[in-house]
Image 1 (cartoon, rainbow, N blue to C red):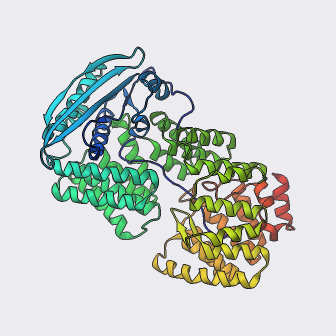
Image 2 (cartoon, one colour; image 1 turned 90 degrees about the vertical axis):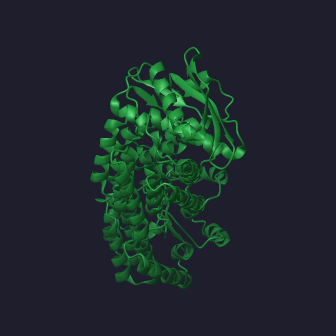
Length: 579
């Protein structure tokens, strides 16, 4: 395929806090609790306020040792649910449920009375262990949150140590307007993370910038800003030094205000991980936080381990994260993707099915299941009906191209290309350029003039991108392919190798192979067949690239016409026969 393609649609919904195949069995040593979304009894515009209160209670309770707290992401699945406490408890594997309602009676902007009515319920016998009604002025909302957390700890007979008590009673800000602005911003950030929407992230950052204008010592707002900036950088929406510097400045400011704040340290760890792939430093910070925070979400540590090539360890860590977040369809998908990379296809399909049982509309696991069929069977007959049901997305389009090429139905691929409303699409390690894809189709069709026309158009665009971002491997790899289709062998190889040097497997075991596959494509186009087979042999003897758009398996290699020039090569023949 004449584009770079991979996908890590993180699906992580919010990075400050921490999908389903039967109930999760709680540990006998840890009491498990979920904070269900508090019902908003005020105006519809105050929904974000109820969500923010729920999230803050979840965060405070997660400091307590001896208590396992289900993440907000999974708890949010039960918003306005008709399910009983018993059903929810069984699905989440929890012993206790904290639920309630909240109303903000506004007298003026950021003032007025707030009523919070929490209740703690034991799942086993549906017993209400405790309930209360708090009628306070809005300025006392943090005290209410602390009192609720303290009461839950007392009811569950949990010992609260001094550091935990400080965390339970900490006020994030004394400025209610700043806090309210931050809650509005967090709503946008959460939506942006879950939908992979950079515009929502930008809006969330903007509101947090406003929050710190109102209170320059609002550490949590700086943390949220740092996460947003590093997310935009990491997933390829803004790979500028300025964006990375903003992430670092916000994390540093949060640590300056509150040096012991776990969220601030996590933001710094993310900066090293996302900005520099400094896994050792990031992992060290994450592990130190885990010692203090029993409910700290370990999924990011699992992602780091995966990139370090610690595949089995990463899988174990991600499954542990899923136990705290058993309704996170994105995390279930990520685990499935890791299984695909490890060629554990049966297990991968189980996790994709789990993701879809939580969110039937999520397109990535649907594409994942299609990818598994092609990788394992080398047969596309079964996939068309499945593809028809997948929601529209550039990655869905790309799977159509992949299947069409495997079937050698080139007119179908050309027709779909011509119907696209976009010229390019890119994410973390995914770069699609329409002209480059046209060139790849015309190459296998042996339409040399059309191939070169489109490759030249792609080259012009890509040279400009390389000048603008000389350290971005996506553009070097794609530029190498455009040179290959133009017959410029030396430049093609030079650019392909440059991409592997900028992003080697030694730096990222999960995503680095993407550029090795791309280099194999270049070698094949320019006639360097021995070198091409070298790359393929490496790919087949190691975990493959994430996730499913760089399809590398023997069954698929037998189909893909882009490897046709290698068909008579003795080593390529042996490669296919030996597997």
